[in-house]
Each structure stands twice: as C-alpha cells, then as structure tokens.
Length: 529
Ligand SMILES: [Zn+2]
Image (cartoon, rainbow, N blue to C red; front, top):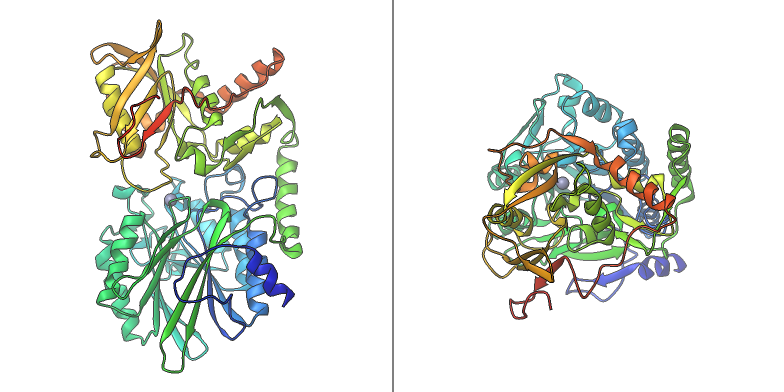
C-alpha cells in the first residue's frame, strides 16, 4: 500500500469525471503516455521529468497488477546536445531500456527526420527494440529491414481483450520535414478512418491513436468516435505542454504531455463483465516526489560519462546569471523569457553596427530549463540543439509588422514559432483574426516609444531558418541581405564571456513595467499599461 501512496502523491490533477479511487489494484491495462523528450536525464538539476521517473511510475503500476504499455507521441531523436554527437542513439538506448520493462510504441515526430540523409535514421531504427509506428507515412531509406520495421495499424492482446493502435505524423505542409527517404500522407482523417475500420475488422475491443499532429487535428480525428465507438482516445505530441480534450459519446479523449516528461499521462482501461469499458485519465507531474529508478540511473550516468568524455569542459563556468534565467519551453514558447531577451539582444550585434530589430522563434531555444547562478558551457550548448546562423536584412515598418503576425497565429499554448524579440515591443490581441492580431508594435524613440514607422527602413537580424520561411515567417527576399553568418551559439558564448571579463552578470528580469510582449485579455485593456 505504501507504493500506491507514492504513486498517488505524484498525481497533480484528476481529469476524469467518473472515479474517485486511485488506480485500482485489480488487473487491467494502463497506458503511460509521454511525448517530445530530448534528454536521457531529467531537467532542472535532475528535479523534474525524465525517463527515470517514468520507469518508477511504470514499475509501481506493474506492482499493482496492471498490464502497462508505454506510448510516445514523437520527437526524441533530435534536437539536443547529445544528438549532435550520437544522432539520437542515446535516446534509442533509453527507449530500449523502457521497452524491456513495458512494451513501448512510438510514432515518429517531425524531428526524427531532422537529418537530410537516411543513414542516421537507419542506424536508429536498426538499434531499436521498441516499435516504430506509422499509418500515414512510410520509410523509403533503401534498407528493406528498416523500411519494413515501421508498423501500420496493429493489435495486441491484454487479457482476453484486443486493443488496436494506429498512428499518424505531420506532413511537410503542416510543419513536418520533407525528405527523400520518406513519404507522408497529409490526409490524416482518411488514413485514420481506414486504419480504424481495419482494426474493427480485426475484432478490436478498444482502439487508440498515437499521433504527432496539431491539437486541432487530433480533436478532429477524435470525432470519428461518433461513427466508430471503439475509438477510445488519442495521445499526441508536437505541442510541449499538457493538453486535454475531454471525451464523450461523440468524441474520443485527446491528451498531450509536457516536454521531457515533466508531465505525463496514465490512462487506465478497465472492462466490466459486459465488456463495457471505463477509461480514467490521470495527468501526472513528474516532480521530485517521484523517485529515480536506480537501474535506469546506471544508463543515464553512462551517457553523462560519455558526454563529459567528449566535452570535458562542459561543466566549466563561463559567466554568472544576474537572476534565474527562465528558458523552460513553457516560457520561451508562450511569453517573454529573460534568457530569450539576452540571446536576441546579442543577435542585434552580430553584424557590426547594432541592428534596429531582431527576433528568434522560441523553438530554437532547446534547453527547457533554468540558467541559474553559474552559467556553464553546458547551458549554452543545451540552449542550441542545432546550429543556427544569422542573416541581416532590411524591411519597412509595415513589412516587419506583417512578418511578425506569423508569430501570433493559431490557438492554444506552446508554439515553437512564438518569437523572442529585441529592439521593439509588441502588443497582441488573440481574439482578433489571424494576420491582424498585432494591435501595436513600437520601437524606441527619443522620449520613450513610438509606433513603428510604416514606410521607414529598419535593419533586422533573423536566424537563417526564419529568413528561409521557417515556422511560417515570410521575410521579404527581393533586396540585399547578408549571407548566413555568425553562429548564434558562439555569439551568445561571446556575450557571456565579455560580461564575465567586465565583472558583470548576464541577464535581467523581465520588466513588468516595460514588457517586450504584451497580450491583451479579451482586447479590453490598453496596450503597454
Ligand atoms: Zn514536433
């Protein structure tokens, strides 16, 4: 019973309408769902998230007699500091460890295809003992064994029940990668329905989807329950924060967890004597109260050791943070981040004379952690999971304002395209139509701030990725621009080292009196109050 108490203490929120009891200690099936994980170890100095805690949760459930399956909603091979060295094989090792404890099924996210050629994916799939799932895409790597390893809709037995699983990933139109070794069908609804019908024919008592799509697409697919009542739930990834859309007779429940297993889901599935199914969805915050698994820690320490062997200077202090610099994904993808501010301020200095304006997509900042006290080389290396080169161009105020609209499109939390900015401040009203949400965009003036001047030219520094149209930003290209230069990682390192040489600390708190990003609630208050 002590073990049950430990598990219950980790529950932060109970979202199902139907039950008061914790996980029943009868036999039954429990899914553990996670998504968007980039580290072998935990975050926040080992105090939050991480596979080690996932393993503890899985073992507790098993000790209670549950049949546990682990579901992963994609994005794990890249990007990260480790991926630059091992192309995700460190994650495959961690997944294999979990798979040996409870079967693990993973759908590919867009980041599994970050590499242009197929070699690294081939190596990852070949090393995998867990199952790679996919219904709307196929591998065309030229390696028959790897291409054949991708599992379309399948069933497994749990007790006397048959469970059907299908899975979908983003195609390039929706933010996925376009690669020669890959073919992705963008007709998610069509593919899902066909897979569900196939699973019905195989006699599935329960059907679930594992996806890497946008939330609204998952919710749309969940509506297939009206026609296909066995469809029970869809778990997904891509967004980096917990999301939940409650199920009903007409719609399956949809769930997503937070990045790096900070928040996971456990979903209990129990059948009564008549075959009626009860689902209970638990959102579980993996905080310090959940113990690390000693056996998993051996694996985590092995990879830490290898990393330190490659980069013995990793833990070296290069500077000092003036305040805790918040670079968690929940921050950089939703609001102004003080670590983001420091980084974008450096960008403006990348080409000699400081540029007027600069911005970066929050999704480029991958550390998902605080940078506190000592700024180490590791903090900088983890912030940039991939190389990011910068470009200098010019835009008129009107053009710039139009470009920035892309940063505030869509609904719901956690957008990788949400911008961190420098040289201006912006006021956004999300209740307005997409493309018309910027209420005010201001630049510094002699005595404070003024609206950006529509027909004046401004110099702008952006990452090459955004210059090229990444994340939906449409930067005008019919004018001179610098070639890609100045790698952002080293620019930031240089900024930290320069501060250190001057005896200064880096970063400053987000100024509540003068925020760079201001969001109107219901469009009621004035901007920049
Ligand atoms: Zn993704």
